[in-house]
Length: 368
Image (cartoon, rainbow, N blue to C red; front, side, top):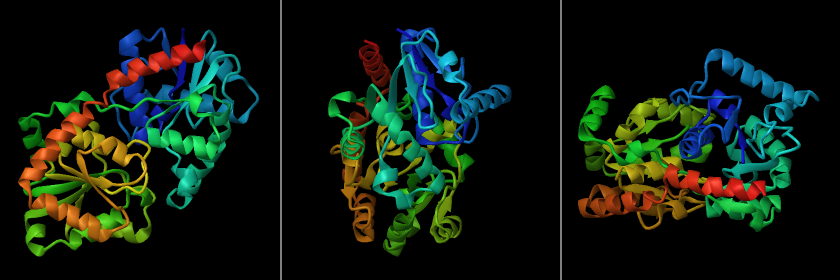
């Protein structure tokens, strides 16, 4: 069996999908080798993960994106040539004309463009809409959570038997943060107080405006002891939210965080807040739990499934519920310790080793 994976999202600025592809491909290759797991374009070895840049050299990035454009917008069958000899082609939402001979598979990360289109940019909505036909045509699909699978069945009309749930993973670094690493990252970012941490692209779906309002509603005594720290690239947030993030008196915005700093910065937090309106999996939440950080998250989409009983669940549209959950954790070291232990245990379910093992079985079935 040979599998070709479209890796072009690794060449562009991206967050969750890029994170998924990078670690997934890396662990698939560790398990079975790059002769079985081929990437299009060929990326071996992968360069260090950088969400703001490419995982390939400038020349390979240019050639890879150029080949994708030719494949998408001309009749030239470039992907048929690139995937020759492969039994399975795993597509992303950047592909418009997959090769004809291999069995077609893909990963459904979330269905939020269909469920909450108002939270997305026009470009994202167009890309996802164009992908719908590919997902319906696919021989088999991976869903990153049971919640995502249910949404895909309901919205796309895909038979549930064609979808296999394979949870994404958490990099080992989040399970293994050391105190010296935490101390260094505190110094690097000037973090002298206890802090509530929120990580993710600043966009409407992440619900940062509600988090800012909830933190501002906390008693003054707690806001003097804790600060709110936001991290992640500035996305398509509305103008008011973007201005509040950059200029909030009670919050610090760190912007994009390099991958090596993410695990110690997450572990340095006293509380992790993730009041997202919808997630297909929720990498930042799983990562925070792996690092032992007590967390508050939303009671919608996949987040209760990923959190289990290891986080406080709130209505993400309720400033009051979010404020009360933050205050409860700030005032209860015992509860924080309990959630920290439960979080590490829950996060141990989500490893890239497990994801790679289950994915190889998935590809083997797809190839038959």
